[in-house]
Length: 117
Image (cartoon, rainbow, N blue to C red; front, side, top):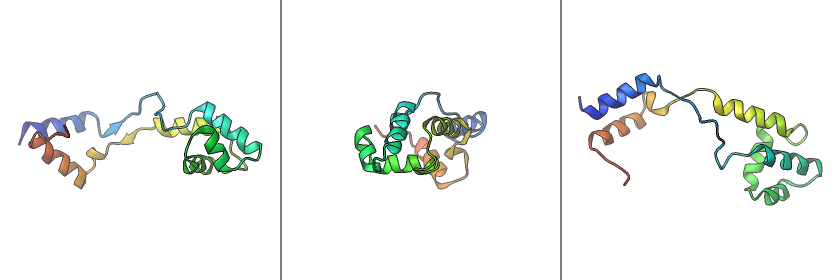
């Protein structure tokens, strides 16, 4: 068995197939300040497009954020932020730890010392 596959298998076993998110928010995730602005926009009766324009976000992003956290009638910034952090920090199964076509492709590319660069 090639050393790359062995190293990959060991890594998967040591990591137990889980990847814990880092504590920082990604740039495409809404911040608490953005969620508060969103909540104020909803309370002011602004449309999703108006709110999105104010936040310099896509309307679809704002719409998903509102829908994901209860809709226009019950959206609350603080609760939405807490729910988002809770969802982001739960352990998630690593895709390469699951038996799949992706795992096979990655292992075969590692054998070939293939790189995107």
